[in-house]
Image (cartoon, rainbow, N blue to C red; front, side):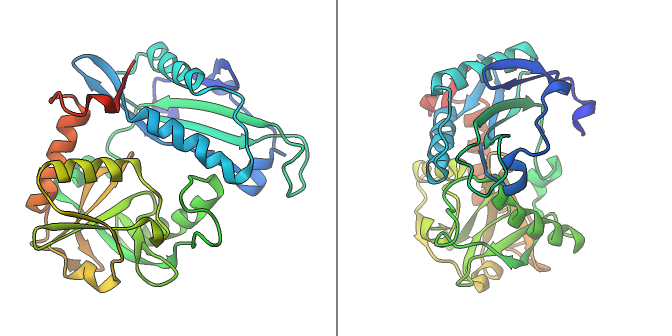
Length: 309
C-alpha cells in the first residue's frame, strides 16, 4: 500500500505539525546528497489499554546515540520527541502504526563537511502491516545469501542506523527479490553471517539458540534484544556473542529474522535448501507467539517495555 492510499495527513517537523503534502525539504539538503541522517523504526501496537509503543525509550536512546559519530545535535529533548510522537498517533486516530523518526543535516552548504548545516528532525507515523507479508509470519520465507557483503565497523559504524548505509541493504534485498526470494542474508567481510538487510538473524540447533555477536558488524537490534530476553525467560539457552559460518545456515534446525518491521519472521529456505522441515519450526513458533502475546499485551509481563499513547 502506498502513502497516497493511507489515511494519514500530518508529519512533525522541527517542532511543528505540518500537512503531509507540505513536509518538504530543499533539493540541496546535505543529508540527501551524502546520506548524513540517522533514523529509527518503531512500532505501536493496538492493545486493550489503547495504542502502546514498543520499547520507545530504547529507540529514542539509540537515535541520540546514532547522532554521536556524526556530531549531530538534536534540538529537541527526548520528552519532546515522545510527546510529538504520541500526539501524531492520537491526531490520526491510529490504533497501531509504524513510527519513523529521522534526524539529518539540512540545507545551507554542500561541501562534504556538514559543519555549516542545521540539524533537522522529523517524525512520521503510518499504518504498516507485516513487513515481509502476513503469510510470512506463519509459513516462513525463502531467502538467499547475497553477493553483497556488510560493511565493517572499522569502515563505518554498524551500531547506528545511518540513512546512507541502507544502500547496502537495498542492493542485497533487491538482488534477493530478482532471484525469487523474499529477503537476503548478508555476510560480513570475514565471510561469516551478519544479518538481513533490515533484520537480525537467529539460528536454532539442538534446542539452543544462536545469533551473531555485535563484533560481527551487526546492528544492536532492539527486537533482537527483546527476543533474547523472551527466549531466556522461556528457558532456552541463547548464545548471543558467536560467529556463525555460512555453512551453518544450511544445517540449522530453524532460522528466523527479527526486527521492528519484520517482528519475528521464520526462514524456511536458504539458497533453495530447506531449513529443518521447510516450515516454521517449533522453537521459532513458541518465541514468535510469546513475542506477539507481549507486544499486543495479552500478558502482563514486560510492562516496562511499553509507552502508552
